[in-house]
Length: 441
Image: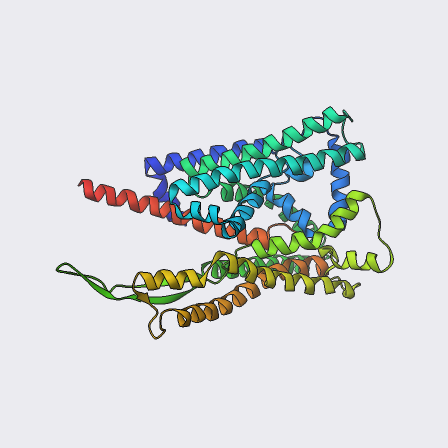
């Protein structure tokens, strides 16, 4: 990795792209420190801390994705979550609406239209989320100008901040390195690392009774981190390659085709989407109850507590870990659901048949579809199991040892995935330049 970056910095064009990327990211981090005008930040921070304790890890994850901007209520507090949500919505609608599906198949022009619609949906979602937040601040008395104009001002500022992040991500994608939205996410998560490591130091090292205990804590932390990183790398890079053979065709006097290729099926086909969906669904009741100022008691109180990830794996209250079982079931369900709408075995089999391709030993048509479905179901289960392991480890250490950090679990998958994809893009840029130099010579 270091050699790749070192060689990339020697190339002027790539060096400009890398510098441009870092400059945009620095501006984003500066924006995350600017407070939203008209809001009492001290009162909001106190409220956010209380609702985070009651709503589970979903808000912690959202706060990590914004680099702490949400807890500080900066002008970038909404982060790029509206853009991510709108992208997922458009992806689902592309399958459900034939017109959008036709746009997707039109090539670059169609994808440009879909991206433009995604931008409008992003602004609409940002207005909706920002307006809801501003109205809740108004009801709670967090606004200095506790009036309708104050609500409008906060809504406009938060929406503008989200739109700016969307623009910054697109600029990085076009003129920098890596996927811009992913790079903003990565930089925000990295910005939280010092705070998380300080928390681990205070709990396990500074609070250790003696040197031996502190040393053992350091060794265990390093081993857990190494295991998680290696496991995520293998999970993200693992794929099942299904061989495909194309029959030969005679065109004029030439024999064309006959080549062999493969269909790569990633083990973790759904990425972090299942975890995000499951976490959001589990946290909705607690967030709504806290926003309404209610305090459920009796059976409902225990149910809400069981859905709070902060209560999972706690030795003093093991019955609340039933919520963890529900969470695992949701992760597996969303892994199958999201993959089923993003990968269509029938369409893949039809395209192979039209191009004269077939899987060795499998007849074209329905047998090919059945074979792809069988392989895909096995792969999804393995990927979902890997996601469950990655998600469970942070809950275990948080519940048993009180070590709640934001860079494990979903955040770690994002970091590893973005770093690997960015390095691949840098290597491809270097490869293209090498070929151009070879042709010029």
